[in-house]
Length: 244
Image 1 (spheres, one colour):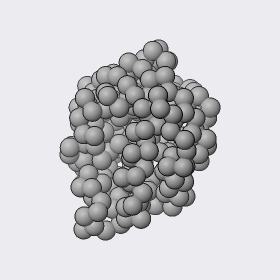
Image 2: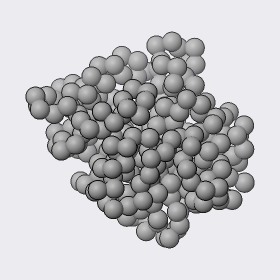
Image 3: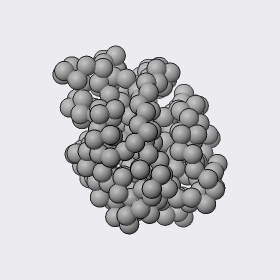
């Protein structure tokens, strides 16, 4: 999937679903009401909250927010103000109806937000979808206030020349790209436990019964068949950086 229309159809398949959401929450150990369409587990979410370093009342941009699950949970924990941006109008409308929060249609490279208007930016498992990773990082830098934090969870190829791995993930090299785009205090760390949990989820999806009326489950199982054979060529990373 690459376009907003692709993701609109995909998110529409999650409307009213229960089997896929319940399995994802159980395996990833997520809060009972968190609607995830990413692969960050509960322990990873705890790390992200700490890495953001946000105080109550500050502004968090959840960029490529999907249905808003992670950002809403973080805002609940911290008491920060949440702005969610995603290029899927279906996902944005779902998040608005569920929470009444500030969710907007925009892209990784054009959020529509004012310059220096947020205190932190979070991108969960979505940076690879930007047509230009560097343009997306520049947009994050632009909307951040001075000393604002960027936190990214994503994948990188263990070997950038491994053609089993799609070009979108092979194009992510945050240890190089973040400083090049003006960020400081850059740290990119591998999270093998996240990788292992993701593998566990894909395997659980393939082992689960597939309800005939659950398009989300069918979609996730199809993705599992695609991802598992090359998962050993990826690493899960947590990247943090600061706007000067």
